[in-house]
Length: 295
Image 1 (cartoon, rainbow, N blue to C red):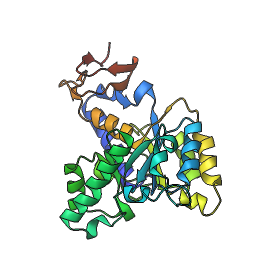
Image 2 (image 1 turned 90 degrees about the vertical axis):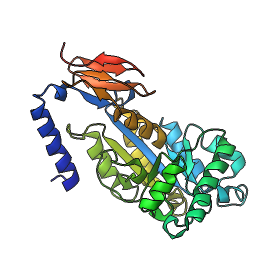
Image 3 (image 1 turned 90 degrees about the horizontal axis):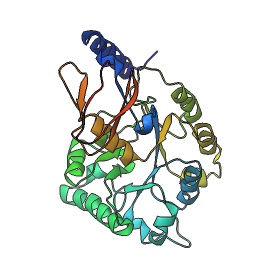
Image 4 (image 1 turned 120 degrees about the vertical axis):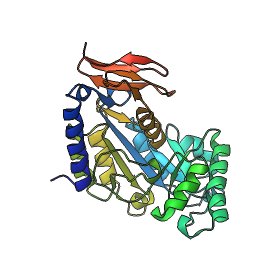
């Protein structure tokens, strides 16, 4: 039986298709290169076990997002629990670096001034170290509320992950409260099997796995994540992407504009968007107006 949220969305999709006479139902958004599904990972705290985990993902052609506390990076290096700032480029090559707060403080317990410093200084430090934009966040301790979300948004954060697993594969309604599919200790392999056979009513199905690399390193048991990577790698219908790549793409799909009959689409964003139609996979380039209906 579907969880209540998934059942509701499925029923709504059927209603919309019936109302439109089925024409709009011929079109579905898909991921870049026409891939139907996406897989992403999110790992917190930047401990030394990230070295092995990042390489595991990289060697399998996968991408992950690593959420770092910049205040710990100063202590990184030989003899430290944390990755050193001088090795960020090597350790996280091909992956995304994102914020987790300077000192891993609980966001909801901070004053506005403290929260701004905790998030903004983390972002500034990581951008200085990486030379790029850092626009992602995971809430320390998984703790957040509306005020924290609003502050993060005003500070330039595009998304933030919670720790509330859904067990499902729908993209988030609000990227500043991005609930993952599961922690890697919560039926990961079983959910992976479900994801590989995900039902057709899902549009842009997404599997999002989170955790901490030290959970593998401290126990010495990497078997679950290694088995999952082996199961999921090399799939032609899966887009292996970082958190920010998925956020950026899905947000672009939500800004697409359509004619009244739903058969013509305009892309007002700077992101190329891919759609599946009865005629096959089509792309709509930035600024392009394209007929996507029946030919």
